[in-house]
Amino acid sequence: MIIIKSLIKYFNRGSINEVLSLDGISVTVASGDFITIIGSNGAGKSTLLNCIAGTHLADGGSIQLGAQDVSAWPEHKRARFVGRVFQDPLLGTCAAMTIEENLALARRRGCRRGLRMGVRSDDRDLFRKELKKLGLGLENRLKVGVGMLSGGQRQALTMLMATLVPPEVLLLDEHTAALDPKTARQILDLTETLVAGRQLTTLMVTHNMSHALRYGNRLIMLHQGRLILDIEGEEKRRLTRDDLLARFYQAEGEEIVTDRMLLG
Amino acid sequence: MTFYAFLGALEQGFVYGIMVLGVYLTFRILEFPDLTVDGSLPLGAAVSAVAITHGVHPYLSLLFALGAGFVAGTITGLLNTKLKILHLLASILTMIALYSINIRIMDGPNVALLGTPTVIDPLVAMGLPGYIASLTLFSAISLAVTGALIWFLHTEMGQALVATGDNPQMITSQGVDTHRIIIFGVGLSNALVAFSGALIAQNQGASDVNMGVGTIIAGLASVIVGETVFGSKSIRRACVAALLGSVLYRIAIALALGMKWGRFSFTPSDLNLITALLVIVALCAPMVKEKFPYKNK
Image (cartoon, rainbow over all chains, first blue to last red):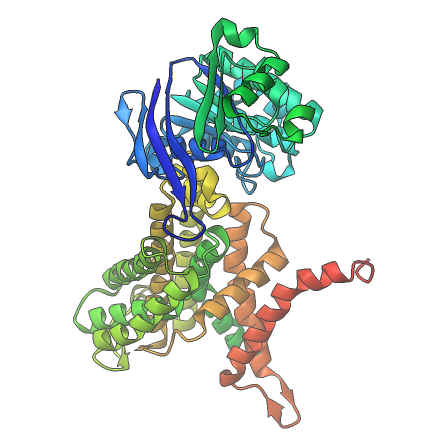
C-alpha cells in the first residue's frame, strides 16, 4: 500500500531554470497493484519514481509506504521497502563483483551489514534456485564477474536482485528501453512472472503504449507533472490504443503523443 | 646492490606495504584519491614516538597510531560527504592541517627514538641479528594485515564498501548509506597508513614531520607496479599484488640509487622525480597502447 498526497517537486528552484516537475500528484496504490505509467518526455514519470525511492526529496506533500510516512527518509533507509530496476542495465548491478556477490548484496537489502562473510554457503543454494527461474543458465556461473554479462542478462539479474527480498513496492523505470526488442520482451515476461509470483506492488514507467496496455491492472498517465488519467480493472482490460489516444486528447486537448509512443 | 641493501629494500617494501594497502583501499576500491596519507603517515609516527618516549609500550603505541590515523581519515571522509568538498581538496585540507597537528604532537619538528624500546626488541632478545629481526617482524605484520584486509573485504560490510566504490547508486538502492561507508573506508585506509608510519619511525629511530612527503605518490607507484606485474583479477590477488608491488618498488628505488654513469648518480632527493615519472608512465601506458593498436601486436 502506497499513499502519495499532493506531491510537489521543483528542480533548480528559485533560479531562471526552475522546473515544476511534479505539480501536486496524489495517488493511492493498493497492495498487489501493477500500475503502468505513461506520459511524454518531462511529464514527471521518472521524478515520481525517484521521489518514492528517495533519490529526490519532495518539496511538498507526503509519501506513505506501508504503515510508515517516509517523506523525510533518505534513499538508503527507504531501500528496505523499495526494489528498483533502472533504464541503464549497468546501474543495477556491480560490475566489479561476481553474480553471487551481487545477489548477496541484494539479499541483505535493508539489513545491518556486519562482519559475517558476504556470501555464505546457504546463500548459494537459494541463488541457484532463483537464477534457474531466469532460464539463462546463470545458476552455473555464480562466480562469474557481472561485467562479463550482456545488458539483457544484467537486467534480468537486476530484476531478481530487486525482488529477492520482496519489496513493499517495485519501481521499474523504463527498464527495457535500452534493450533490443527480443530481450525487452523476455525481461517483460520475467517481470510479469516475478510480479505475479510474489504478489508485488509495482509501478512501471514505460514509453511504449502497447506495453502499458498489455501489462498491469491499472494505468496512469502523467502530463506536465499532473496526473491526467487513471484507469483500472475491467475498464483497463478493454482499453485499446485508439481509446487511449482519444482519452489523451480529451484530457489535455493538445498534441502530446510522441512518435516513440505510437511506433513502440 | 649489496646483500644488506637488498635486505633493507625488502624490509622497507614490507613496512611501507601496509601504507600501500591503505592507498589501494581508497584509490582502487573506493575510487577516492586520498592525499591525507601524506599527513597521516607522519601522524602515526608522531603519535607512536611521543607515546613511547612517555613510557607507553611500543606495541600499545601502534594501537594509538591506528586510532589517530582512523580519526584523520574520517575527517577527510566527513569533509567530502557531509560538507560536499571535492575528495581531492578535502584530503589536501586534512593533510595541511595534519602538518601543524603533527608538530604540536611532537612539540617540535621531530622526535628521536634512540635508546628507547621498539617493537623489534622482543625479536632481538630472542637472539636474532637486528637486520633479520626487523625484516621478519615487518614481513609477518604486513602479511597479517594483508590477510585481514582480504578477509574484511569479503565480509558483508567489506562487500558494501567494494560496491560503494564501483556503483554507488546500486548499493544505495540496496539500503547502504554510502556516506558512512566512505567515511569508514577512508578512516580505515588512514589507520593503516598511520600504522605503517609508526613502524617506520620505530625502525629508523626517529619521527619527523616531513617523513610523509610523497607518500601518496610512492603508494600509487607501488599499487600500479603490483597490478602490472601480479595482476588484479580478484580482491585477494589485488591485495597481495599491492604488498608485493611495494616490495618491488623499494627494490627498484634501491637499484636506481646504486647506479652510476661516470660522475652522475641519483641522490635520495631525486626519488620524488623518479617516482612521479614512473607513475606518469604507468598511468599513460594503457592510453598509449590504445592509440597505437597495431604497433603492439
